[in-house]
Image 1 (spheres, rainbow, N blue to C red):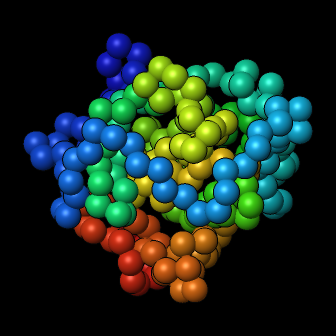
Image 2 (image 1 turned 180 degrees about the vertical axis):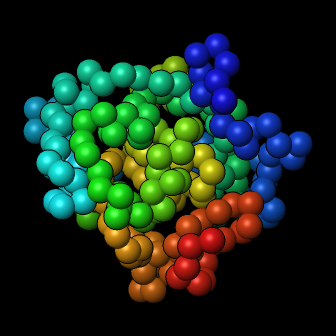
Image 3 (image 1 turned 90 degrees about the vertical axis):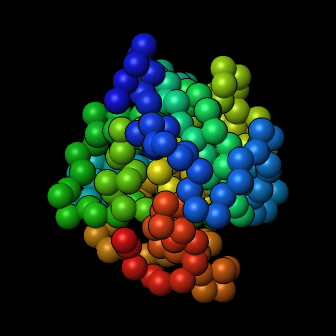
Length: 208
């Protein structure tokens, strides 16, 4: 849904916008694994791979990524640690824009998001390409702070915020679902999908 040129996340139309077990915060807590990376726009790149699921793998430089069409998204954010920050306006590149730059095989059913320092998270391709999903570069009109993912953060409003990975560097398409960093048993075995409305925080390694 769109209004005044802004994509409106459908969850913001719910009568009760707080999922089960969540509490609203006006602050924006900082949570991530590992140190904050340095950003060098002359060496930064973004990759889409692999063959044969992507007919021709793609690599964007920072200027090339910045030149892609922009969108704004009004959405809420829900963290698995039980806070929710409502009424965010994100600005960046819609995930569906990637379809204009590569041919993705129909066998691709899942996405692995690759980030700085080897961090990763997985999600179903339909969640990745949701209307309100984007690679955010700005939040509420300002550049993303480094500790919230600058220069590029994936935002998937319908899933818990660990799926909205910070410091994204690439997207891998997959035929089968496999766990990312937090989804692995040794790191906490977070849920493979992370749906806040069903409290899919931990446990089974199946999609909903």
